[in-house]
Image 1: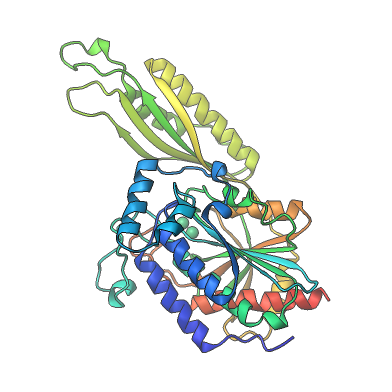
Image 2: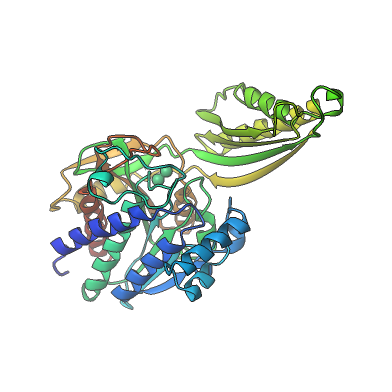
Length: 435
Ligand SMILES: [Zn+2]
Ligand SMILES: [Zn+2]
């Protein structure tokens, strides 16, 4: 095996890509510019790429924005010259994401990687102390921000792609890199999985920058505590009426929604383990003197296991239906995102420790951390395990000034070197193991 150290140039490029991407964050299923950006670079490295409708099963997408919102944005990108029209066509109607494949045609393992690419509906901080302000790369898309570090994930994925292409002669086996849309709200993994990219994968690797505030050089070898989750939208429909003249003619959707919000918080805890429920958004009514005929609610459930999450979903649905019945309104329930449980494999801990032995950037390996949140990558991890492969999810340490999904979220860019080195050294190790 040749020299696996990556160059200073790549380190610098990853930072540049990150800062470019950070300025143009895009929400789930709207990552047109982002997909185009990734695809162009992957092609320039010599990868075969599959973009948009070639990369995902359209019907398996969850929580897709309204078509009118999508086409308005598509038109804007084309008219501003941000994305060529024929490229937009490949992604039309919210079919974003790209997959890159490198087949060395030499016998060896099939290793797959997943990088999530979407941003969040958050207005980025304009504080002078905020790193992207100081360095002039704050979000240019109003109300949208890379506030989870996925800009860093994309950059790492691009760094890895560049490395793989440059070291093709020293490699064996096959490499698949999934640049997954719409991770936030757990909406995208299933659609990408449906295309069969992971059907014959031996090793599947993914990870997240941050999550817990750690030091640069800290690598969390395995992650436990992925919570199964369901994201639910509810629309209550009643009947509006004059609140003074004939209130009895109204059917109050606002009260039904408010009552539901209170009661789901009272679902009995389960002796089987950790559960969560949160009503995060409630919009109802149209004016002070009108009995509200509409209420829209966004809520989510979580559970330590898929069964525990299902218990929560069942209870939530029961409460919604009972409350709608009580107020004589209609309730429409829509599942708009999902994640399942997954367990970690101890085998990775010594494997990662051994692989990072001579690394330059990794200073300290933490065997395992409890994640305590949800990630739709779990569908991919479980799929690979079902097919006899091994899956793993890392955490790449960085101090966090503000938490994830916060307007001041930021990470230290040196973490990009740590993440890239982790993947590179692990590949080297896995190739040596499979002679
Ligand atoms: Zn996030
Ligand atoms: Zn994230």
